[in-house]
Amino acid sequence: MVASLKHRCELVFFPVVKSPERNDAHVTELALAAGRGDRDALTEFIRETQDDVWRLLAHLGGREIADDLTQETYLRVMSALPRFAARSSARTWLLSLARRVWVDNIRHDMARPRKSHVEYEDTGVTDATNSTIWSEWIDVRTLIDALPAERREALILTQVLGYTYEEAAKIAGVRVGTIRSRVARARADLINATSAPEAYGT
Image (cartoon, rainbow, N blue to C red; front, side):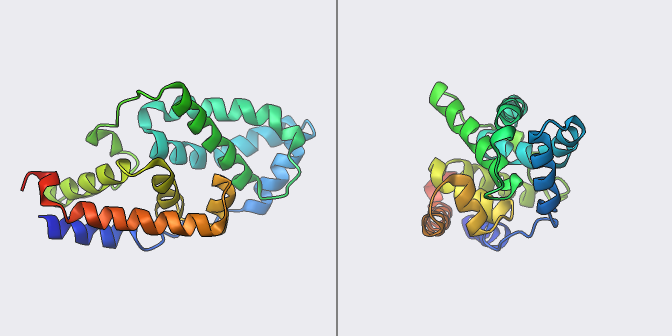
């Protein structure tokens, strides 16, 4: 079972997942227009980006708080948009704000319990038909949830959500080399965890 789970980790999470093409230039134009007071642009900006924000926060903090954190993110965005200067893409800027909301939430609630296995259902694979494969998928997601927060964030941004190392660095507010190092360490942590039979009672 452990060997199979280790193989699942390597296949599912280590290759970079290519996200659907994002029209970052258009989203940035919408953000600039919204910052100038264009309410239609603001509405479209939210519509174009809310799935990305929710997905990131669901992966980082859990589905049970993703809705609330997404709402808080956009409350902050509306006050920050007039100061947005397009030094990075609006999507990258927005996700960096979402990340700060997540960090602030952690600081205010350090005792929050870990997510249960079933709470990954809507953010992971939903069409698995083999119960053994699905069980192993849940185990992998649980291992990722157990990673140190900074390593988990880097792995999710680059290997699950498909952002480049450069984009992930801007979102996290660190150097590209730091993201690369965190991803490498997260990968090593997962391999080590899947090589530890006692973690699964075997």
